[in-house]
Image 1 (cartoon, rainbow, N blue to C red):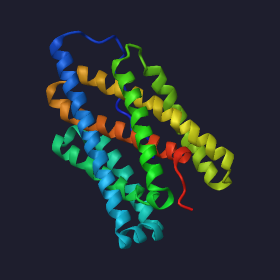
Image 2 (image 1 turned 90 degrees about the vertical axis):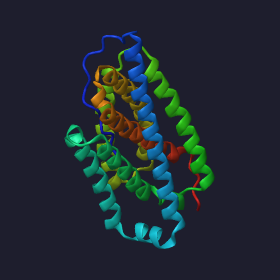
Image 3 (image 1 turned 30 degrees about the horizontal axis):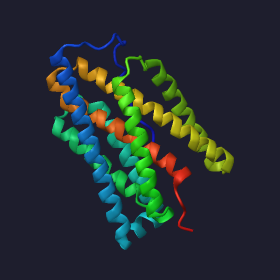
Image 4 (image 1 turned 180 degrees about the horizontal axis):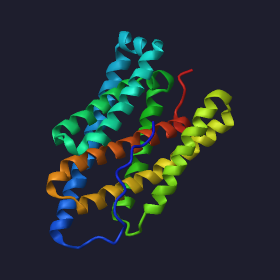
Length: 240
């Protein structure tokens, strides 16, 4: 799943020390992390529901068109949010984000049939620690990560292309390279997206806070999920 990125922010000129602005920025970032966490909980709940309901998981696994339908629905929601974010209410945007999280939960549920629950839990905590460290770095660093983000986006597009090629070549060596590159790319994107949201929050007006928190939560949610899936290839233990 590719990462939808926020509108490119203005050039980095350092952060202001004004207490009110710092307080407003912190408030937006709290909303971002709260929404992201709730989205993760929605995804986990839906995944567990699907895998614990035999008829549902059987339907998802043995109907390929259902998988593609879920994937297309996710892409459609992301593009709809990006195109109409400012023209819908903050509540509607948040609702679409949670809908996206629910659909993604159904799409991810088959991983519980492939990997053991213990290895999934272990990978989740490794992901959480890595994500948290990089998000903290992105939030507090005074370095401008703009160029870093540009290179990461190019690398992400390259990763998607190579992944599509490997569907046909089925190279195990290339698959490991893709997994390693994916981990590095989404580690970097986590820091960049965090800084991007913080910079935009510092320049937004109060009426934009809700919308910004939603799209920021979506970005960081996608960073987390993709990082988790790539790390799972290294730390996941097969049920076979």
